[in-house]
Picture (cartoon, rainbow, N blue to C red):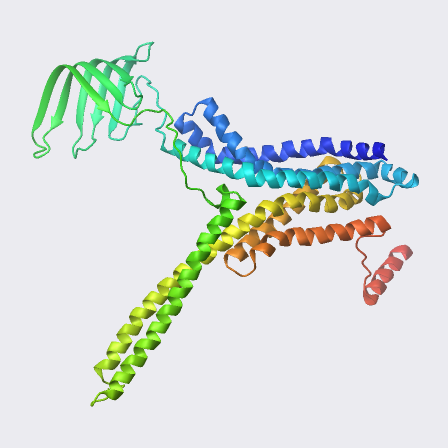
Length: 459
């Protein structure tokens, strides 16, 4: 039996790696399209680009591994069924569910590994990826000195250079249009110059030689000044294209592990309780205020007229103030409850998605036997169909949970429950060797079909 187990597992390795490569490649290509413009415009070094991809590879693997399990099971059992190897196993006394047991055990081990990955590796990778992308966004655009081409990379400056030496430092024929902190721009022209960064690589220093400054008067644009110089230096701050790395202690819900999220939910629950207490307190304050006013009016020698008395206006004004406070606290309460539900959804998601490996094994085995000679195309097609269905359940469940229409548990585990039940049903049907779906047309439809069939035979 060990030989059969090893044989079944080996049949899954190739399709699993194939599915993992294809699905991850598709996710990477989609990711590249999103950040390609950012990478090109910022002039990132190769190591930084690789770091961006490696950090974002974590969430890609969290999605692609369960889907690859479905691809592997579909393709493996489809081939075994198409080549009548499952029939051969049955002839030797090995039932179909016995063939599926080692695959379920393997998917269970993979599920445990993915739970650890989603709880420990994925949040840290998401956290570092967010910080890195934030640093890249703040990075100054890459720029190159090209003769005869305006350099517009520096806010407030437009630089035109006619000739650039081989060292890319010494230049000739420099024209600078400067408008930084000025209503009317001034023009600086020089025959020669040296362009280089300061030692900290954050300030651009332009040493100009033998030039002129043409500057309109700020107060009277009709007046004009021309100044000649032999040497002039211009400093443009914060222009270095070095990537400045930063750090952040803040973590979003997808950047926290389970223990962090539970701790965050405890704090959010304290805020929810505080908001509820404030609402109850304000309502009690309103009742108490009305009772005091009515009691004092009865004890007064001139009781208030509920239609015209100033006391009634005072009551209405105070109730309006309390109403504003209550509405404000209700908004806070709704916001805190959404945060709490969102955090619960993320907690359940860390476990629900890995369990999909087991669900897809139960579902993929019978479907693989059904598809038979479909090959890789059928395996990938069915996998994509069911994974889109699974992901639609997750997204819809998350939206319903945010609106507090269903619990966070069913929002994340509903897809596993439905598809798992379908997988068990198909598994039972496969073991019993019965058809999955039986369709018996109504009697009147059967008579119509028979009538047309007889007409076709007679003709």
